[in-house]
Image 1 (cartoon, one colour):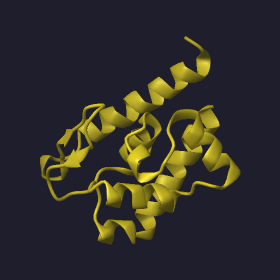
Image 2 (cartoon, one colour; image 1 turned 90 degrees about the horizontal axis):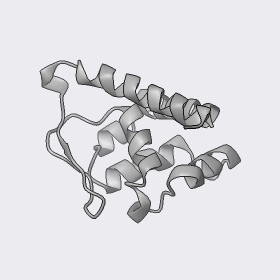
Image 3 (cartoon, helix red, strand yellow; image 1 turned 135 degrees about the vertical axis):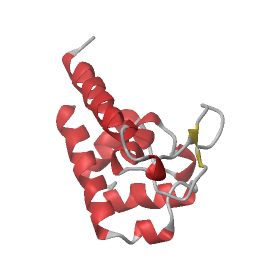
Image 4 (cartoon, one colour; image 1 turned 90 degrees about the vertical axis):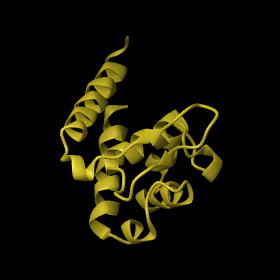
Length: 120
């Protein structure tokens, strides 16, 4: 494995581990399959880190968001911004309009995009 992939895998594993210890009242269940849309099954929004990771994996391609290197290149060139991913999450039914207008949430998505961009 190349070093950037190992770093990405470690970052994602750490983020997901931290998300797993969240209080049960904030837990969420996601059902994901390559041929199906991701659906949220309870009211709380997904974390900014999970939103970025889902975008990276290609879960928002039907909403017009590229995946993998296309996402990174789009972000680095300024064509894709945090708000774009948040809107993709709204269109996919993963986050609410209220969450989409939360500047703290959008800023956290921006930070996650920067982290992912810096790894590559």
